[in-house]
Image (tube, rainbow, N blue to C red; front, side):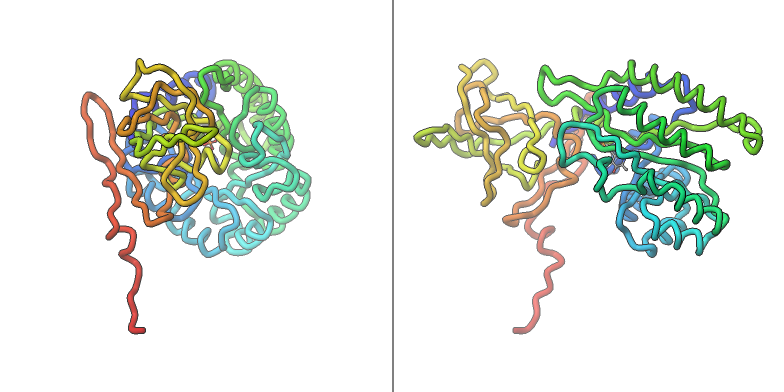
Length: 391
Ligand SMILES: *Cc1c(COP(=O)(O)O)cnc(C)c1O
């Protein structure tokens, strides 16, 4: 895995500039790519973090983020894990009514929290990465807002943020705005808000002609609407003019295009119908093509001027682990290195050791330096927790 942070920084600045008219906070969703050096790099740029497990919180703290810069947005975790996060001092985001009740009962107004609402706005074309639809497990349904408010009032809770995350791949400002309006409507019920968090879902190009989120356009539309809402909200008598922050939690948008998975062709296998290029990797390293039916562009960097032919690129795992079906590639020979693009987001972080195959190394290419930032795993790394007993 090769990473080029230059692209991460460019994407970060693009987002920052598009929303410059607001009191903006960018919380990087580290589940997309969690190497500690990338976290430090984003901290240098001024980002905070969005963490979805207590372990991601711990890594964020180790990378040097202060607890207050970390938003903890888990789903379906025990109240115990939430309490650990409170002890560490991070901003809690609550995703279900049961936890909201327990949180209120335990902490009352002594610890602020954010509430994750599900506006049921469906974004993106792929059902696997939609989180806003009506039977989604994520967030508290906007239709249960009355119930939420009853709990908040009964337990005298301090709600300092509202949150939505409708899922990956938002293409047009209209979808965001529809979700935003619902959050604004909900927001007037809470007087202590410090921020509204619109989650993520910014789409990046995987194919050359992919339609991507127009960040500048989105920035203009959201900024205009957010600013007019802020005026309204700040005018609530309880507010006394306190300004709201606008938060986003991009993962894929920042890191996807910065990562390249290099694989070697072990075998070229001609069958009656197909030519397979079998590589020394598989869905154990990049699961997105098999899991999400995701397209990842591939180039043959060993033979860039070769005659294009059609290949099905497959891995070496005992599963059908196809990277690309019937793909036109510059002629592939055994030993060639293929470069799989957009491997930065949800590549390494979703990898596994199926078939006892080690995970690859991570290499950083930055400021004219090439540095190893994660060692390739060994068989000893993989089996170190096996305990051999007397049989
Ligand atoms: C995964 C996730 C994100 C990041 O999503 P991307 O599509 O990678 O930008 C943001 N917020 C929450 C709560 C998430 O679970």
